[in-house]
Image (spheres, rainbow, N blue to C red):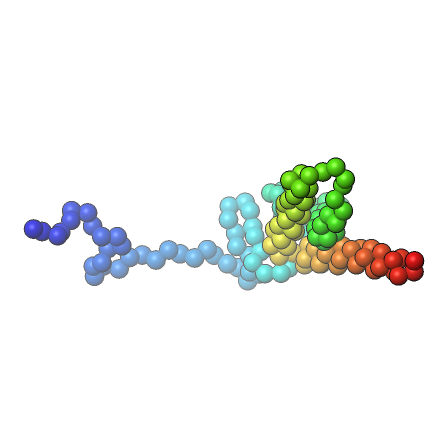
Length: 156
């Protein structure tokens, strides 16, 4: 009985060398170019950036860049504010309904957090600073509200 097969083994195990795939060309600014789209591979400063969607905020448009920074800031702050969760259960809701509402809020918060993460992956310093500042402001709002509630409870 022969154990030889008609199909060649993959990859070929013979003395011939296989051509290795070429790596993408990189320039001195650590930028990878693919067709009409370019993606930075290191932090850079500038208003020419793509945040979340192709063509947004657009190149050379300072107003749209500032809008993109504000959007990332608000997304990060909202993710932090929603991280507290729902502490109060409205009356008349059963455990299933309450759990579904909390799960929906959690899913929404995670969606915001992933959008912030994808924004930061643009490697733009302005977007990074906006994300960190948004998280810090959101954390401040949460802690301020908690400390104010504790102070009111102690005063009574």
